[in-house]
Length: 208
Image (cartoon, rainbow, N blue to C red; front, side):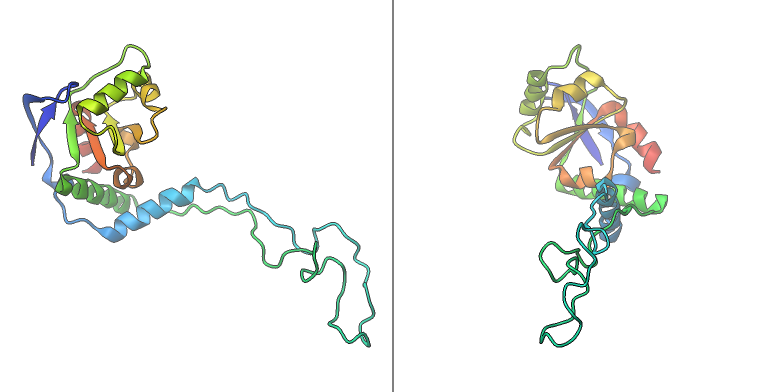
C-alpha cells in the first residue's frame, strides 16, 4: 500500500511511502482488539472503591429487641443491612482490575486496528515537523490544513516532542503519542490517524 506524504500545509508532496502489508493489510482480528481494549480500560481503573459492611459502620452492637414474641423478623443490631444506616451487603472492596495479555495478542490487536484504519482510508502520512515553542494555534492550523479539525485525531511521532505535545493538550479531540506508545484503544478511538514520516519504520519494528 502506497500513500502520498503530505506537508504541514496539507498539500501532497512528491514523496510516497510504502506501508508494510503484514501490518496494514491483514485480516483484522476483532476478538484480539476487544481483549486489548478491555485490558487498557481495566488498567485505567483505580479500584479504590469501598463500602462499609455491618462490622464497620458506627453503631451499637446491642440486640435491639428480643428474639421472639414481637411478631417481626429477628434483628441482631442496629448495624443490620436491612436498617437505614446499617452496613452494606457484599459491597465493593479495593481490588486490582488489571490482567495480563500475551504480547503476540497485543501486537495482533494493534495490527488489526491499523488494518481497519487503512481499509477506511483514515491514515495520513505527514512530513516530520517540529515546533520551536508550544503553540496551540499552530497545531490547530495543522489540523485545519489536513481537514480534520472537527474529527478525533491521533498524531504518531517518531520521538517525544514536548512542544508538539503541549500544543495539542488543550484540544479535546486531539492526541499526540510516540511510535512506542501506540495502543489499540487510541487507534480505534480516533477518526483519523496522522503518522509522522519518521515514525513509520519504528512502528514496523515494534509490530513485526
